[in-house]
Amino acid sequence: AQKVTQAQTEISVVEKEDVTLDCVYETRDTTYYLFWYKQPPSGELVFLIRRNSFDEQNEISGRYSWNFQKSTSSFNFTITASQVVDSAVYFCALSGPNQGGKLIFGQGTELSVKP
Amino acid sequence: SAVISQKPSRDICQRGTSLTIQCQVDSQVTMMFWYRQQPGQSLTLIATANQGSEATYESGFVIDKFPISRPNLTFSTLTVSNMSPEDSSIYLCSVGGTTYNEQFFGPGTRLTVL
Image (cartoon, rainbow over all chains, first blue to last red; front, side, top):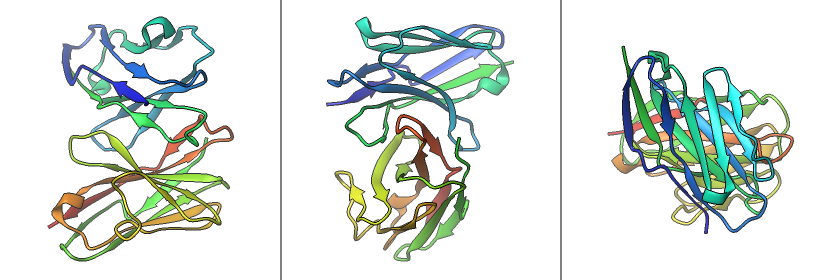
């Protein structure tokens, strides 16, 4: 069975703090894909990153960074020097080669960045 | 990346009525997906729509309640039938990219059923 767990339901930080959003996944596939999406209050789903299971290199994009560790089945997301505009719900998702591209989503983490 | 539009962006409907949501993509895609996001919840896949074949529904979703059309490679519709307040959700369509491990989402349709 495939499953994505985001144990942090809500996180509140003060602007300029660093924050890490946790994502743990379960899958029996050897090839799979992990995603992070941002959903601001307006409701649209904004694609942030896709990572395949063969690429364990960490990635940095501006203030965003992702740590993929197959040994712990985790794909954590860190925002450095958070800003108020980072306030949103963040979803981690999983897709596999036998799923036709459909995504299994975690429950989401609501991040609130206060000025 | 694909550009996806949905109509309507939001609607308020009376119980017992039906609403058809349209999803238009700016390029031809093989697979289109319809998701539901209930208030405060995560996204759940309703069905996968391939052009030229019947949609494949996930457990808990049935064709009579959520009929789907896929007349060509750039367009799909989802109908929410005989609505009840429990159907109040955001409905999103998504498409796969050139490789199925890409996934782009439309802006969503925010439905409220009174």
